[in-house]
Amino acid sequence: KQEAARAAAEKRKAQALAEKKRKEAAALAEKKRKAAEAKRAEAARKKVEAAKRAKQAAERKRVEAARKQAEAKKQAAALAIKRQQQAAAQERQRAASQWGSQIERHVKRHWTPPPGTAGQVAKVRLEVSSSGYIKGFQFVQCSVPAFCASIEDAFQRAEPLPPPSRFDLDRRLLITMD
Image (cartoon, rainbow, N blue to C red; front, top):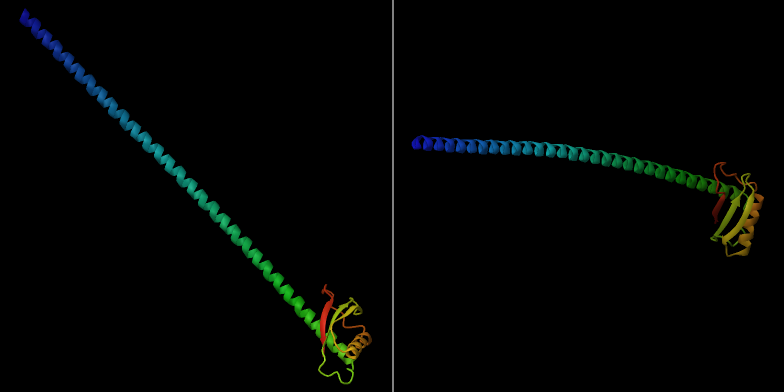
């Protein structure tokens, strides 16, 4: 009987040990399963984050490209306006120069310089109305009174002067008489 009791006790002990090992193996397997699941979840989270970062980077690039394109368009428009303004200014300057030359030729037809004034030079600031009449006349440079008087007389006799272009808003000129 004792032998049977001892054998039964060893059998129970072996069963308990086997049960303990089985539980430990199950717990280890559960632990490994949970670790693998956590690893898969972490990988999925990282994949989602990477996709989100890539999407944000693509959006930043798109916005930056749109900003650069708008800036380039703005600069091109500004350059076109500047060129247009320069061309208009050159055209106004050319027209004013041409108009000044017309007035100078017109006045010189009515001018007889006084004797002994050869080589003299006078500069006249002139403002002309749209109809060609003198609104303002001033000597900027003239040193011989008779020479100055002959020029002023020639301008008065030459009225009306060639009228300015109807688009020419600045009707003031500086004319050199020599």
